[in-house]
Length: 81
Ligand SMILES: [Zn+2]
Image (cartoon, rainbow, N blue to C red; front, side, top):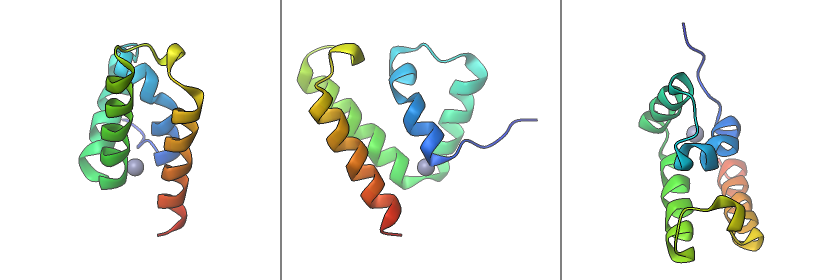
């Protein structure tokens, strides 16, 4: 029995997911949420692209401004529905 992630929970787990730090069951819930949620899929792609531009996968080094821009874009998307 697994519980569906909410969009907000997913956003909180993105850095762990991209680092491969999520425990298997959480990673599976993450993937299954993405399958049914275009908004989170887009958000994840933007997040990946931002990290890609930064050079390597080091969320700790991720520009806080870039991260907050992404987060507020996500909030706008949520609020606009
Ligand atoms: Zn979602």
